[in-house]
Length: 370
Image 1: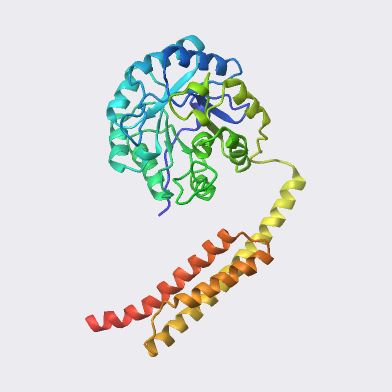
Image 2: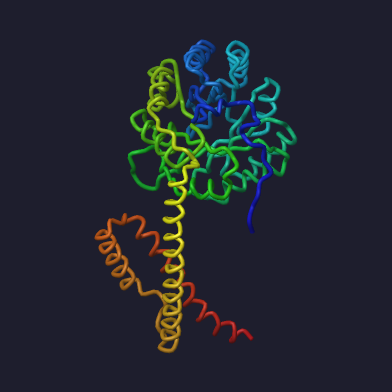
């Protein structure tokens, strides 16, 4: 079933200057003191940042860690709003946070990755925000679960929240990687494809976990056509109480943003359109041929399943599959195809083939039950 969301375009939020892309939300990981909040806001405001972020409540893995200053920090955000005219936003994880934000006039909230992973909390937040006009951004869940991410958007939208956006901050890695979180750009692209109308931010700070990765991850987001960045900035990261390694001073953030090459989402040039149409037509033909080849392969897989059934042979032949996969990976290298791409494609094909053969055995089981 095709899902749709009833949303208001970000151009009508009154938050961003869309004539100077990308859309940017910046500020410290955590609000730590009134002085730190105001100094950071001053530095960001001086070069045109309009939307200020700061964590007030910080979900931490271990008790005893700095878990945010709590509601008193909302007064500091009020001061940023009053003195610099910036829109202010923070993370909420339950209905109490929502009510506090509404009381202090916070302009926008976001739902963090751990909260997105819990439908009960998302529903609680949606109910607390029911029929308010406040924009809500939803970070991806900690695991690469696209339906869970979409489900959070649907819950909020069903509560009457129409100013919706998403933030991609990557996924908890299953193995050691250079970044703090696995970028998982494919899932971001899939969500963008399904809901092109909602604003899409990348969070290179949490994705990279280190200042040295921020530029490359931010540029990657621009290359993929995402709308903006939520990026952490602190007046003095060396003394930050949380995530010190991934925060930039305002001047460094300015340099990073100026270095980005923002890609156009469309162009009216006739030669470009003609060439693109030709290339896309070629891809369409190749895709149709791929489908025909996959159908042929599945037909043969079903014939193999019948043959195995006749001779009472187990469906899965692990050693043969390992040999096939290794051969395809080796062959893929000759065509400059990445190993992870080949592995994902052929594992999906193998899974479908096993399912088709299993259905053949299941038919006999169903007959026995009758």
